[in-house]
Amino acid sequence: MEALVAGRELSIEDRCRIRRRMMFDHFKWDPQSGDQDVLAEYPVILSADLWAELKCKAEALAAELYAAEKEILCRPELFCSLGIPDPIIRAISGRKACGVLNLSRFMRFDFHLTRRGWMISEVNADVPGGFIEASALTELMLAYFPDCVSSGDPSLRLAQSIMSRIPGKGALAFVHATAYADDRQVMEFLGRYFRDRDFRVFFAGPRHVRWQKGKASLSGPFGPVPLDAVIRFFPAEWLMNLPWYSRWEDFFAGGETLQVNPPEALLVQSKKFPLLFDRLQTPLNAWKTLCPAAREIADAPLESGHWVVKPVFSRVGEGLFIQGVSDPKENVKILKAARRNSRYWVAQERFDAVPLAVDGVDKYLCVGVYVIDQAACGIYGRIADRPLIDHRAKDVAVLIRKG
Image (cartoon, rainbow, N blue to C red; front, side, top):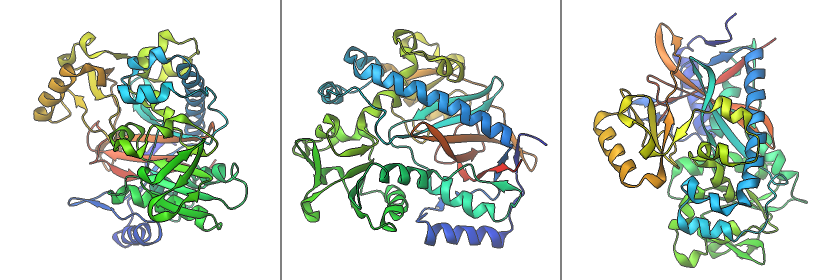
């Protein structure tokens, strides 16, 4: 049997049943984008051997990334090379601790099948999403494919990791961009794991968190409430856009209150991380094998078709230039912006993606493998009509064939 195939398409009745369960049981409030259903009508099925291979690759990448992050934290002269904005450089430079392994950490590596084998386009090391789909959609789809199993429940595993570091039934702040329903739904979904176990759960914006002598508490309408953990789903690079009186820099100072993820994860979230490969003492063999080469904008022939142009902190495929794939009108704007402000852009060597046949139609798959506390657990799948995984891609359950 093939290592990677598309499963059969579910009936309309079964798809509607899953859609309702996702909306009303699992907080998936945005199952549609424009006129398109964002949930794929079928799963993607991996062989057990392929899943074992991707797990091994993801864990190797994560181990190297943690070691590189620790080194970079102790070498602030490298921060500018990563495209980190100056206000955040100053905030991170004030951090004294260089240890990162004792914290609850999670990240997601986005794998693509290419002519050169499986490669990653990036790591989401700061605030990766996809938990509802990776956990709930996978569970619901398994009911229709009894010959398959799950790759793991990343939401439950993350919750267990956080709980193991908190004594008793503590108070947790789920910090997110409160104006966005798609962020809130993830917080509600993850927060349920803690509410069901009698933790005190608060949904708040970053301005509600105050730090004093290394300890965090909630202010404003909540309290004050001393916090045992801050689970942040607010991108670290957005923090500097908050008003000065919010004292956002305190997030970077560290302290006794657990932060998940700590904001210094932004250092390795940067798409310019591959530019440091030869400047770091940390061995990065997995990264050099699985991640495409990168160049500064001025050093890459962008119109050649061999390079992808990305913002250093792009998310959901936003702002990407891929010759012949992305919108031509947008390409002009992207190249102009990249050349004008190259510090915050990077060129990545383009890989030749291999399509997956779905009922005779070519689709392009992204397999997002979560690593939680250095162990791979769970997959967030997305599938698109073109080799660009952006907001138009569909969420697809990724199942593992038994045996």
